[in-house]
Image (cartoon, helix red, strand yellow):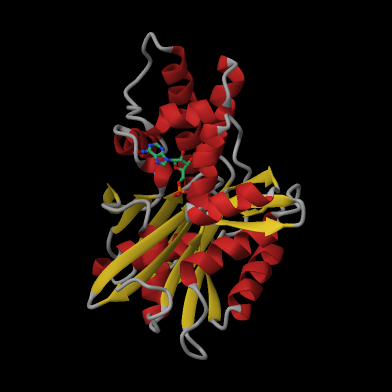
Length: 332
Ligand SMILES: Nc1ncnc2c1ncn2[C@@H]1O[C@H](COP(=O)(O)OP(=O)(O)OP(=O)(O)O)[C@@H](O)[C@H]1O
Ligand SMILES: [Mg+2]
């Protein structure tokens, strides 16, 4: 069962820059549904609106425009050789996008429906504050909270890195480092017995790699993204300039992540005494290319990491890890 109308148990919701994912637990099994966090507008005509309706395309008519949402927006963008627009950037609502809130509301409602009972719980992911920078997390968090409250849910935010700890490190008593490398951000949390000790986010993630690779190759960022997702292997430089550009900026992203993590741990005064070594788990779409783990481990070794790690691994289900962790937190 994964029908939003029938389900009355707690939910986990990952509100990501690139994808929104809902997790449910039915009969002891986790189930996921996702939509791309994207949209496209078409000029309104009666004929187009009725064709979209007939084809079951996820859309709404807004005045003189038809807004197509989620996975369908990407399909239409490919058909019309247009760029799908995005309501979020860098992990939070896109301030340049007037449709941002309305699009998020539509996609979230499609995925979670309205609450089956008063007080149905949902935990939703939010980014941790950016390391050394200002951000718009409070406004973003309040906006998502309001959308979920209007749908009848009792909504609670959870930082994305902590959600990864919940989703991946149950076997280690929720002690260790959860990392999610998404499209807008890398989110990191060091938790001890489920209590966050260090939590931060970094703006160099998947979109950074796409944009920088596009800049130096003269290609479009969306083309970089497609090539990156299509079997890109992080195994050094080759004769292919796109692969080389992706390799260089992946390297920069990983170095930035490891160096900031090292610095944050080294400078924390209230680091608890850890008798044992702790695990570190990597999740999010950006960790998926082959070779990512090896590169990350190499950077850790070079950085003289201040904590003993028992293992460093990639999540077995990296794209659903945050939603699963949010659900597990909601079930606790
Ligand atoms: N197979 C793949 N290989 C490489 N990169 C991938 C792959 N699949 C997805 N990605 C990249 O992962 C990113 C999306 O990951 P994810 O869904 O975890 O992000 P998000 O949660 O929406 O974003 P954020 O957490 O930053 O707000 C995009 O940059 C996408 O290009
Ligand atoms: Mg994410």
